[in-house]
Amino acid sequence: MAKPLIHIVGAGPGDPELITVKGERLLREADLVVYAGSLVNKQVLGVVGKECELYDSAGMDLEEICRVMIDYARAGKKVVRLHSGDPSIYGALREQMQILEEAGVGYKMVPGVSSFAAAAAAVGKEYTLPEISQTVILTRLAGRTPVPEAQALGRLAGHEASMAIFLSTGMVDRVVEELKQGYPEDTPAAVVYKASWEEEKVIQGTLQDIAGKVKEAGLKLSALILVGRFLGDPVSRSKLYDAGFSHGCREGKK
Image (cartoon, rainbow, N blue to C red; front, side, top):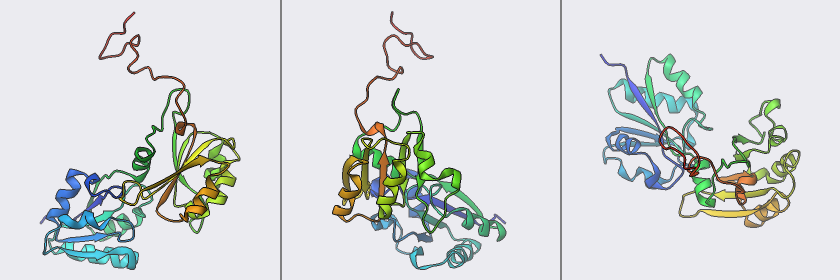
């Protein structure tokens, strides 16, 4: 007898067209979908079948979530656990996996488009630029969930890398205070609310004024803070398409 299996699917950042082809197929085939109702755009669920059971995990605890998935999977049903964005980033995923493993239930992850990618699209920028930044940091400010001391925002700011800060907009004053430990005050910053949703909103500024702009707009949840020189104008081109640069697919012109 085949081992029970659950698919853990990334729904993408919000736009229902940004779920993967595989993710949409699994939703169409599902007998049960347990979705993060406070984060997943309900339009993504428009493809599920009429007989599919839907559970909103926003009002459920970890054991309740896993129990319903395990019961359906053991009964031979097709189960999808639907996470927002990509489940591997701030998905509270590992503890679910552990319970499934202990129950003898298998799982497969299906990646999704993360909100940090959608946020870059919203501002029309590239995180990695020659001579500006070749490093992207995905992080959050310590709140009710602590952050390892060595990974505190103020310490990470010292790298002056491109940064996308999750789950922290409601504490924007503290975010800016810590970022200033590494970035100059004139460093460009942006806040993207509900990246790729119809309600998407972009606020741009610098570390000097972004906190005031965010509070004036009343943004606290469902927003990403972006910071770094990548938000400005590039000063040089990459080598990849430079006419004089040779690589495995093209000989450079002299």
